[in-house]
Length: 279
Ligand SMILES: [Zn+2]
Image (cartoon, rainbow, N blue to C red):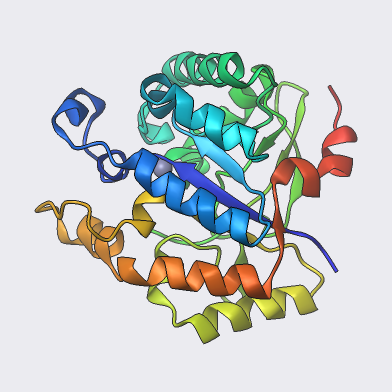
Protein backbone atom coordinates (compact mmCIF):
# COMPACT_ATOMS: atom_id res chain seq x y z
CA UNK A 1 0.00 0.00 0.00
CA UNK A 2 1.52 3.38 -0.93
CA UNK A 3 2.13 5.84 1.91
CA UNK A 4 0.18 9.07 2.00
CA UNK A 5 1.29 12.64 2.56
CA UNK A 6 -0.40 15.33 4.62
CA UNK A 7 0.80 18.91 4.19
CA UNK A 8 -0.04 22.34 5.55
CA UNK A 9 0.55 25.67 3.81
CA UNK A 10 1.46 27.71 6.88
CA UNK A 11 0.13 31.23 6.30
CA UNK A 12 -2.19 33.58 8.17
CA UNK A 13 -5.81 34.10 7.06
CA UNK A 14 -5.20 37.51 5.42
CA UNK A 15 -2.16 36.23 3.49
CA UNK A 16 -4.22 33.75 1.43
CA UNK A 17 -6.79 36.18 0.01
CA UNK A 18 -4.80 38.30 -2.42
CA UNK A 19 -4.12 41.22 -0.07
CA UNK A 20 -0.67 42.63 -0.95
CA UNK A 21 2.07 42.24 1.68
CA UNK A 22 2.37 46.01 2.30
CA UNK A 23 -1.17 45.94 3.78
CA UNK A 24 -0.69 42.95 6.08
CA UNK A 25 0.24 44.99 9.18
CA UNK A 26 -3.36 46.00 9.88
CA UNK A 27 -4.75 42.49 10.41
CA UNK A 28 -5.05 40.31 13.48
CA UNK A 29 -2.47 37.49 13.62
CA UNK A 30 -4.17 34.14 14.16
CA UNK A 31 -1.74 31.69 12.58
CA UNK A 32 -0.17 30.46 15.83
CA UNK A 33 -3.49 29.53 17.46
CA UNK A 34 -4.72 27.81 14.27
CA UNK A 35 -1.47 25.87 13.85
CA UNK A 36 -1.62 24.78 17.49
CA UNK A 37 -5.06 23.22 16.80
CA UNK A 38 -3.57 21.32 13.87
CA UNK A 39 -0.47 20.28 15.83
CA UNK A 40 -2.67 18.93 18.65
CA UNK A 41 -4.87 16.99 16.24
CA UNK A 42 -1.88 15.51 14.39
CA UNK A 43 -0.28 14.49 17.70
CA UNK A 44 -3.50 12.68 18.73
CA UNK A 45 -3.47 10.54 15.58
CA UNK A 46 0.29 10.15 15.17
CA UNK A 47 0.29 12.09 11.89
CA UNK A 48 3.47 13.79 10.73
CA UNK A 49 3.24 16.34 7.94
CA UNK A 50 5.18 18.56 5.60
CA UNK A 51 4.63 22.20 6.57
CA UNK A 52 5.23 24.65 3.71
CA UNK A 53 5.91 27.78 5.78
CA UNK A 54 5.56 31.27 4.29
CA UNK A 55 8.81 33.25 4.79
CA UNK A 56 6.90 36.19 6.27
CA UNK A 57 5.39 33.85 8.89
CA UNK A 58 8.83 32.44 9.74
CA UNK A 59 10.14 35.99 10.18
CA UNK A 60 7.33 37.07 12.50
CA UNK A 61 6.68 33.78 14.33
CA UNK A 62 10.08 32.07 14.64
CA UNK A 63 8.99 30.10 17.70
CA UNK A 64 6.07 28.64 15.75
CA UNK A 65 8.49 27.21 13.17
CA UNK A 66 10.64 25.78 15.97
CA UNK A 67 7.55 24.25 17.60
CA UNK A 68 6.42 22.59 14.35
CA UNK A 69 9.92 21.27 13.74
CA UNK A 70 10.34 19.99 17.31
CA UNK A 71 7.10 18.01 16.90
CA UNK A 72 8.75 16.02 14.08
CA UNK A 73 7.16 17.66 11.06
CA UNK A 74 9.09 18.55 7.92
CA UNK A 75 9.70 22.26 7.30
CA UNK A 76 9.52 23.28 3.62
CA UNK A 77 9.01 26.66 1.92
CA UNK A 78 5.85 28.41 0.66
CA UNK A 79 7.92 31.36 -0.68
CA UNK A 80 8.09 34.71 1.11
CA UNK A 81 5.32 37.15 0.13
CA UNK A 82 2.54 34.88 -1.20
CA UNK A 83 2.70 36.54 -4.63
CA UNK A 84 1.55 34.37 -7.54
CA UNK A 85 4.69 33.13 -9.28
CA UNK A 86 3.51 34.13 -12.77
CA UNK A 87 3.31 37.72 -11.46
CA UNK A 88 6.95 37.69 -10.31
CA UNK A 89 10.06 38.07 -12.46
CA UNK A 90 12.49 35.14 -12.25
CA UNK A 91 14.91 37.45 -10.39
CA UNK A 92 12.29 38.44 -7.79
CA UNK A 93 11.21 34.82 -7.37
CA UNK A 94 14.80 33.73 -6.79
CA UNK A 95 15.40 36.51 -4.23
CA UNK A 96 12.21 35.68 -2.28
CA UNK A 97 12.89 31.93 -2.44
CA UNK A 98 16.46 32.34 -1.16
CA UNK A 99 15.30 34.60 1.67
CA UNK A 100 12.60 32.14 2.75
CA UNK A 101 15.00 29.17 2.64
CA UNK A 102 17.59 31.09 4.71
CA UNK A 103 14.99 32.02 7.33
CA UNK A 104 13.77 28.42 7.69
CA UNK A 105 17.20 26.79 7.66
CA UNK A 106 18.44 29.22 10.34
CA UNK A 107 15.50 28.20 12.56
CA UNK A 108 15.74 24.42 12.10
CA UNK A 109 19.40 23.81 11.25
CA UNK A 110 18.24 21.47 8.47
CA UNK A 111 18.17 21.86 4.68
CA UNK A 112 14.86 22.82 3.07
CA UNK A 113 14.06 20.19 0.45
CA UNK A 114 10.56 21.12 -0.67
CA UNK A 115 8.59 24.04 -2.13
CA UNK A 116 4.95 24.79 -2.82
CA UNK A 117 3.97 27.95 -4.70
CA UNK A 118 1.24 30.28 -3.43
CA UNK A 119 -2.06 29.18 -5.06
CA UNK A 120 -0.21 26.38 -6.96
CA UNK A 121 0.97 29.06 -9.42
CA UNK A 122 3.53 27.14 -11.43
CA UNK A 123 1.57 27.15 -14.68
CA UNK A 124 2.51 27.08 -18.38
CA UNK A 125 3.48 30.77 -17.93
CA UNK A 126 5.85 30.17 -15.04
CA UNK A 127 7.56 26.84 -15.77
CA UNK A 128 10.85 28.79 -15.59
CA UNK A 129 10.39 28.61 -11.81
CA UNK A 130 11.39 24.91 -11.85
CA UNK A 131 14.85 25.93 -13.06
CA UNK A 132 15.20 28.46 -10.27
CA UNK A 133 14.02 25.96 -7.65
CA UNK A 134 16.56 23.33 -8.74
CA UNK A 135 19.37 25.89 -8.87
CA UNK A 136 18.57 27.01 -5.32
CA UNK A 137 18.82 23.45 -3.98
CA UNK A 138 15.13 22.53 -3.82
CA UNK A 139 14.69 18.76 -4.39
CA UNK A 140 10.92 18.48 -4.76
CA UNK A 141 8.09 20.79 -5.72
CA UNK A 142 4.33 20.54 -5.16
CA UNK A 143 3.11 23.55 -7.17
CA UNK A 144 1.68 22.09 -10.37
CA UNK A 145 -1.99 21.19 -10.04
CA UNK A 146 -3.23 19.09 -13.00
CA UNK A 147 -6.67 20.73 -13.05
CA UNK A 148 -8.31 23.82 -14.53
CA UNK A 149 -8.90 26.66 -12.03
CA UNK A 150 -9.16 30.43 -12.42
CA UNK A 151 -5.93 30.94 -10.47
CA UNK A 152 -3.86 27.93 -11.44
CA UNK A 153 -3.51 24.59 -13.18
CA UNK A 154 -1.88 22.68 -16.04
CA UNK A 155 -4.78 20.33 -16.85
CA UNK A 156 -2.65 17.79 -18.74
CA UNK A 157 0.31 17.76 -16.31
CA UNK A 158 1.33 14.48 -14.65
CA UNK A 159 -1.07 13.49 -11.87
CA UNK A 160 1.36 11.23 -10.09
CA UNK A 161 4.75 12.14 -8.60
CA UNK A 162 7.37 12.26 -11.32
CA UNK A 163 10.92 13.31 -11.97
CA UNK A 164 11.32 16.55 -13.93
CA UNK A 165 14.40 17.34 -16.01
CA UNK A 166 14.78 21.11 -15.97
CA UNK A 167 16.16 22.94 -19.04
CA UNK A 168 19.36 23.77 -17.14
CA UNK A 169 20.14 20.07 -16.78
CA UNK A 170 19.06 19.57 -13.18
CA UNK A 171 16.36 17.34 -11.74
CA UNK A 172 13.63 17.66 -9.19
CA UNK A 173 10.64 15.61 -8.15
CA UNK A 174 7.19 17.10 -8.85
CA UNK A 175 4.67 15.85 -6.27
CA UNK A 176 1.17 17.15 -7.09
CA UNK A 177 -1.64 17.03 -4.53
CA UNK A 178 -4.25 14.38 -5.30
CA UNK A 179 -6.68 14.36 -8.20
CA UNK A 180 -8.92 11.55 -9.41
CA UNK A 181 -8.81 10.94 -13.19
CA UNK A 182 -12.04 10.87 -15.16
CA UNK A 183 -11.93 10.36 -18.94
CA UNK A 184 -11.84 14.08 -19.79
CA UNK A 185 -10.88 15.90 -16.57
CA UNK A 186 -9.05 15.35 -13.32
CA UNK A 187 -11.24 15.81 -10.25
CA UNK A 188 -9.42 17.69 -7.49
CA UNK A 189 -9.48 15.75 -4.20
CA UNK A 190 -6.28 16.86 -2.49
CA UNK A 191 -7.75 19.08 0.20
CA UNK A 192 -8.07 22.86 0.59
CA UNK A 193 -11.48 24.20 -0.45
CA UNK A 194 -12.45 20.83 -1.97
CA UNK A 195 -12.15 19.10 1.39
CA UNK A 196 -14.62 21.68 2.77
CA UNK A 197 -16.98 21.49 -0.22
CA UNK A 198 -17.23 17.68 -0.56
CA UNK A 199 -19.22 15.64 1.94
CA UNK A 200 -16.87 13.38 3.88
CA UNK A 201 -18.10 10.17 2.19
CA UNK A 202 -17.19 11.58 -1.24
CA UNK A 203 -13.73 12.72 -0.13
CA UNK A 204 -13.08 9.31 1.43
CA UNK A 205 -14.36 7.42 -1.61
CA UNK A 206 -12.10 9.35 -3.99
CA UNK A 207 -9.06 8.69 -1.80
CA UNK A 208 -9.92 4.99 -1.44
CA UNK A 209 -10.17 4.77 -5.23
CA UNK A 210 -6.70 6.28 -5.52
CA UNK A 211 -5.44 3.68 -3.07
CA UNK A 212 -7.04 0.97 -5.24
CA UNK A 213 -4.95 2.33 -8.12
CA UNK A 214 -1.84 1.99 -5.88
CA UNK A 215 -1.40 5.76 -5.86
CA UNK A 216 -0.08 7.97 -3.08
CA UNK A 217 -2.61 10.35 -1.60
CA UNK A 218 -1.40 13.96 -1.25
CA UNK A 219 -3.67 16.10 0.91
CA UNK A 220 -3.24 19.68 2.15
CA UNK A 221 -4.94 22.32 4.31
CA UNK A 222 -4.26 25.86 5.57
CA UNK A 223 -4.28 26.85 9.28
CA UNK A 224 -7.07 29.41 8.63
CA UNK A 225 -9.30 26.56 7.40
CA UNK A 226 -9.56 25.31 10.99
CA UNK A 227 -10.38 28.83 12.27
CA UNK A 228 -14.04 29.56 11.37
CA UNK A 229 -13.96 32.65 13.62
CA UNK A 230 -11.44 34.61 11.55
CA UNK A 231 -12.67 37.98 10.19
CA UNK A 232 -14.98 37.88 7.19
CA UNK A 233 -13.81 40.60 4.79
CA UNK A 234 -15.81 41.99 1.89
CA UNK A 235 -13.97 40.33 -1.00
CA UNK A 236 -14.72 39.61 -4.67
CA UNK A 237 -17.16 36.66 -4.81
CA UNK A 238 -14.80 34.16 -6.38
CA UNK A 239 -12.20 34.83 -3.65
CA UNK A 240 -14.62 34.79 -0.71
CA UNK A 241 -16.66 31.81 -1.94
CA UNK A 242 -13.74 29.42 -1.72
CA UNK A 243 -12.03 31.05 1.26
CA UNK A 244 -14.97 31.10 3.67
CA UNK A 245 -17.00 28.08 2.49
CA UNK A 246 -17.81 25.50 5.17
CA UNK A 247 -14.87 26.33 7.46
CA UNK A 248 -16.66 24.61 10.35
CA UNK A 249 -16.29 21.27 8.59
CA UNK A 250 -12.48 21.17 8.27
CA UNK A 251 -11.51 19.92 11.73
CA UNK A 252 -14.14 17.15 11.96
CA UNK A 253 -13.28 15.98 8.43
CA UNK A 254 -9.56 15.99 9.21
CA UNK A 255 -10.19 13.97 12.33
CA UNK A 256 -12.02 11.33 10.28
CA UNK A 257 -9.29 11.35 7.63
CA UNK A 258 -6.66 10.80 10.31
CA UNK A 259 -8.68 7.84 11.59
CA UNK A 260 -9.16 6.35 8.11
CA UNK A 261 -5.73 6.97 6.54
CA UNK A 262 -2.16 7.34 7.79
CA UNK A 263 0.08 10.20 6.69
CA UNK A 264 3.76 11.10 6.63
CA UNK A 265 5.83 13.99 5.22
CA UNK A 266 7.03 14.15 1.59
CA UNK A 267 10.63 13.85 2.81
CA UNK A 268 9.91 10.37 4.21
CA UNK A 269 7.41 9.01 1.68
CA UNK A 270 9.63 9.90 -1.28
CA UNK A 271 13.06 9.38 0.28
CA UNK A 272 14.06 6.77 -2.35
CA UNK A 273 12.96 8.94 -5.29
CA UNK A 274 14.71 12.00 -3.79
CA UNK A 275 17.89 10.01 -3.23
CA UNK A 276 17.89 8.89 -6.88
CA UNK A 277 17.76 12.44 -8.31
CA UNK A 278 20.84 13.81 -10.04
CA UNK A 279 22.55 16.50 -7.93
ZN1 LIG B 1 -0.74 29.78 0.35
